[in-house]
Amino acid sequence: MIEQGPRGATRATNATAVRGESRPTRARSIATLLTFLIIGATVALTGALVAGHAVAGWYASADKPMWTPADDAFAPVLGLSHGLMAVGAWLVWLTPESEERSAALTVYVLQLALGAIWAPAFFGLGGVVGAAGPWAALIVIVLTAIVLLATLFRFWELSRGGALLLIPAFGWVLYAMTLNAAVAVLAL
Image (cartoon, rainbow, N blue to C red; front, side, top):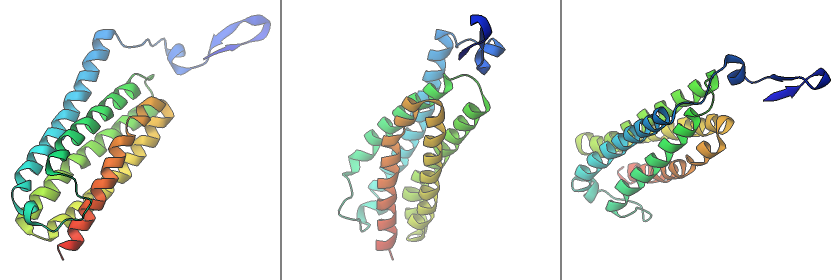
């Protein structure tokens, strides 16, 4: 931001201009976007692979609520939501370096980690420990929703577009949470 001082003189007031930082090069920006996309795709693919094995196993015979999607809906939704989140994280990364940006991206990574744990917890534990598996996964997905909401708020402070790109993922997590809770209750 530029402020006008006495007699028309201007001075830089934002941290970027004061520190003399510049925007990242095009190559670095593209490399960072690709990195975010690869990380998101890895998390989504891991979840889809774990889910795919369980869908033919214990999950196929588990009691499920009537709003359960078709089995083949999980992979494309995970891929799309992680792709949108990756672009959102990249938009935040493009903002000037700051403590707020570091905190926002740290919370983003935390929600990715929780999201990566959920699929193995839900689909994997269900086949191993039975009815306790969905309950353990429910704890993970509730934490994921809380941290994803915190990520959305942190992104909003830095990049409204980046925050808006998290909304589909947040909606999916809330939907998956209802499925998870229903499967847990129905397994009792």
